Image (cartoon, rainbow, N blue to C red; front, side, top):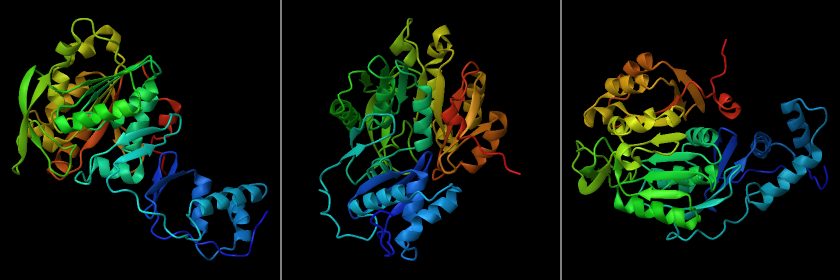
Length: 379
């Protein structure tokens, strides 16, 4: 190995390593940085455990992947990069990031890098996760990207600070459009700012909650999860504010645009959202629209519809259903009539995490990159 030594490299302390669909995310807390690794780079980092000599690493990699020859030069280049980034042979920590700077740069393969301004430390969920890992819901994000074509149109319902709005706008390109609905004033202001920061002229932000009727409703606010504002009273007392509601059938009118993907995250109000867009989805040009929706039995019940009724509505749309399993990094084919009773029991509590579903129309197939997320056949 060029420049190799007999020393035994050691991984920097406190690294957080998480597997994602296309490799690994490594969070480096001392520098507040996130690195994306492929399988081989992650293996080399793991082998830097203080026990393996640097000269032994190429052979260990060769053995792991059953290669014809040790990848000596490639391992040397990887180690050089790891040292430069302070990920091995622990260097002195860099200066701490400015605690008042809530902007982060996101790099996703295939898209130009973009910037997101996040909520301050009060948001323990969406903003905190993106700040640490530079990703949000990697499997659902992959679904939206794979099924939204260049020049396509996305409806982002419950846009929050704009993760799916920005990702969708960059995926669709300048000839596509994203209609982003967000009712909460502070979230909406952040959504608009993130659209501006990234120079996105193909986004139409709408300060409203998508619902079954046009009008006004009270939005009940969470103090520590700024993606958990609800159109119904919570069991715990919450602050509230009036917001505009809009039916998508009314919003788009009698001559709606072609819609390729609809993403719905409405904290239990999804049934009302779908009821308010029945004409939009039944329009001939939208028969191929993909729906990605949250499924949270507790919220659906509190909002007045219930999980069973919502599932019946989904079944009536004539689409194939998949569970988006972020924990297992899988898309799991499901039959709604079998899945719903089990999920309704398992996710009935307010503290139960919601599920996310993909509904694929019969004339569309999973792209190859999503077929890789299907569960592997097990003996």
